[in-house]
Image 1 (tube, rainbow over the protein chains, first blue to last red):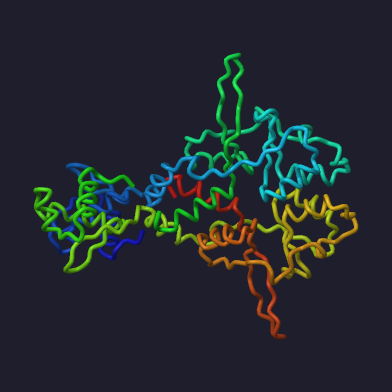
Image 2 (image 1 turned 120 degrees about the vertical axis):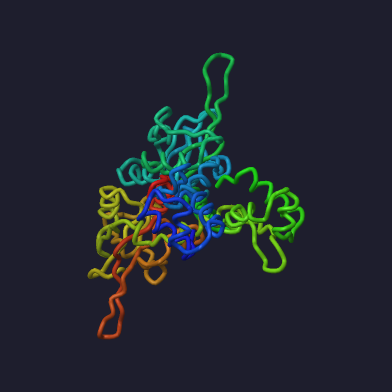
Length: 212
Length: 212
């Protein structure tokens, strides 16, 4: 957000003389208090200044990124997730890789009877492919990262929190899951979406598009 | 950005009666024009309303994402790029893959005498590995995407524009290059950094951290 020259001047004056009242600011700038009201409202709203009752304005040290956060913290996983690509546990590694290319994704989610049991990334596939194993004879179930060692998300989760998990845990793609309560006691997890760095990068691009 | 109830009310009135002057707005709300000045300044600054001289206020239809854009459009490639991992053109594919794993990156940049000549992604490596080729005997120079078919960036470019290129062209990693002017006429390109979806996701996470 670009401040006007007057707003920049106000911020400087507050930094040097805080706490400072609007009367004192108006005096320094040679204008009336009323003339400053709009600028002070903007600077307080974007979080650059704090208005302390009966004390005056102080510099909060925050940049306009607080605003960015308040904007992005409202975006839900369901708004940015894409379709997951799944194969069955007994699919051979070679066939799974071909399927990965056909769908142009970086991670396959592995199912058994429609229930999420694991995930295999392009990196996992590359590792097994150069290792001398016959990838036509090994099923993906053998090489996959198995549940519950996979970080999952819910479609109502915050997209920002998911981006954080992707970076902290160095994950390629997070499955978005739905938990099916079973009458026999054991819950079952179904994958309904996925969020990867591609989805986050797309969101970042969309944020800047200025018109959503 | 959260609008105050008064600001929400102003936005509604403008939507329904646009164009509307500040006098008319003040009349509708039963307040003085001076009392509205700060709110109108905020709404115009964040781009929700447009003030047309001699006409009045109109609803611009923009959300607060304009603010997000103005924040992120100032971030330069040099602030978010990471170190590129390079190998020489004559490195065998197998050795290059091992090097890719050792450095835990998704793309290797290929050089010849310190000059950028190409790039190979994890996807390219996976494709060649399952194709029946002896990857111990093929140099990366044979399978790489060759310059000038690689989208490059300058460290002074805008990080946002790079994110857009990554999505539009479906690229994993963009090399950040420096052009060395040669006296013999032929310019040479050196890779000094790279920006991938990981860098963009990290930037997105940093944006929300509220304190940079």
